[in-house]
Image: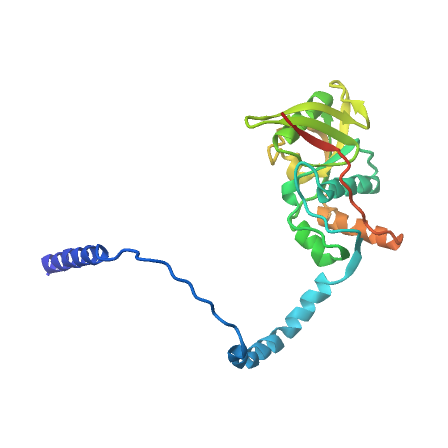
Length: 260
């Protein structure tokens, strides 16, 4: 019986192989499918589905729809510099005083900015899409020589989000990117000085190739839910709205990569 099964399998394989050899592509055709009133018969089913989902949608909307503030434009993250990649580290700098900190500058990884901010009304849902992760605000210290390493690593990445206090100039070519100049508050970086930085915990662990952060000291990482970066951003928009201010972000040359 076993031999018969093996023989049957061999025959089937041969037939399959033989059949495959008779097929080959002779051409490619396309057609247009017209979507018109013929599909209206499904409206009743969609109505029933919508009615079933209505209470769930209402609950989600109650969480996602509250208004936080307004923006002056459509802001999307990009390298080496963009309105959004400038805005978020500036928000971290704004928040620092709430923690009794006075950092020299801020860094926010561009890869962590997962959605654009629309122009006009900004809701809770918009911020949750922008910063969906459980990243917390984080304060740490780097010596000047490590800040220079960080600047080189940021240049090598093609740019990251940096606050307006931190200015980086680099050059790029087909082989590599090279740091030319880096300043903090308009002054050249002193290799022997200690610099206080505000970022998010993901970056502080040396992720996104910013390995200089692994040498950080005096690390302070608040652990409450309100310390998540998304809630920090929400508080910023709420405060601006309270002051009657529209959030405006600009490209101002803080991150420059020149062609070589």
